[in-house]
View 1: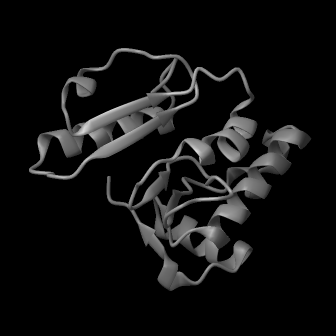
View 2: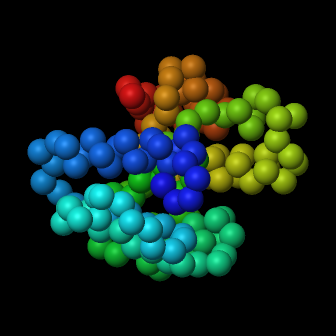
Length: 156
């Protein structure tokens, strides 16, 4: 949701918009690495954005800085392949695909290994792993040893 829209950013925005349009009576804290930006949801008291304005790389922010910023939450959703290493609550991760595993030549060495490391660790750490198809669910189970009972397929 920060900067130029990506697939993950659009998915998160759609999830939040869907919650806003529902009878959802909970609250959502959304953590962002960058500077504050305006969004219509921030006017809804159920949604609280927290902006770090951190100049750290995304991985350093997510793995080292974000854990100390997470307040009293019941569940943490990592929408893009990774979870912070230390969480004060159960974590759910969305692993959209394993393209970096099955098409390694499409990624530079560093990016490929970064994604592999983060996704594999998140799949082991998460209370639940969500993905977009049965095929990807099977790949996560086979490649990462994640039990099928821990993997759910999203229906967009």
